[in-house]
Image (cartoon, rainbow, N blue to C red; front, side, top):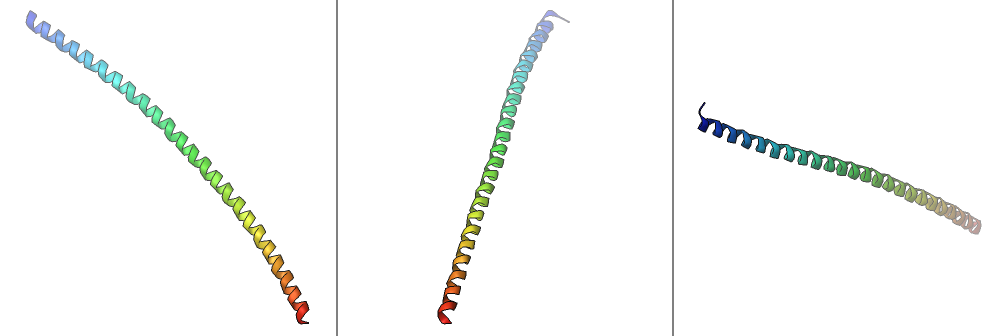
Length: 89
């Protein structure tokens, strides 16, 4: 191998090494971004679950209140019917 070919080979090897380092660094960056995105996704899922749980609790409380209101109205109607029956007798 002559000296010119050796120098060219050495230069090519250096370029390959440099490109390899750049690619490894970029791979590392992408892995870190991926971890960050996974964490954000997990947090978003947890937030959604909590929000859904809060929404369910809110709906349950509203349902309980409506049942209570319905029962009060039913009792008032029964009293009104009883009074009407007294007046008609």
